[in-house]
Image (cartoon, rainbow, N blue to C red; front, side, top):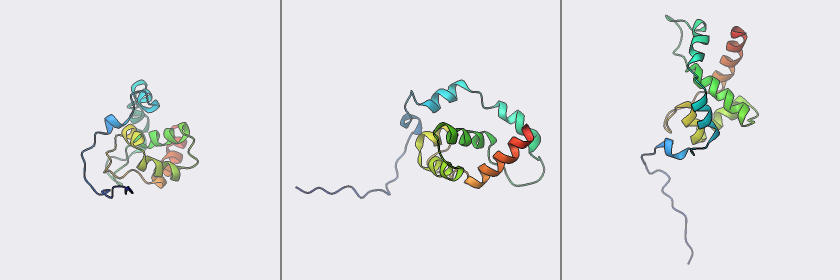
Length: 119
């Protein structure tokens, strides 16, 4: 008998991303080993308190560049695309499946400017 695949892609389900990331995943190990809160202290002088647009979390930007290098992604554009699709990457960045992830141009601009100022 010929069987066809399901066509229920639009079904809404409650998903726990925590259970979708294997316990021995590299990003879990990094998350346990590294205190990323130190980055906030390092970049605080780069942000204005009373003007400008709302910022993207600098830890998220740093983690996106880290993902790019760990997994050999060729560009920030590709990294941003992969972050939007990969559940483990979203988990590492603390993004739900419904949240929009940062645009690649935000990551590239912040990476270049931020690194120049920190050095």
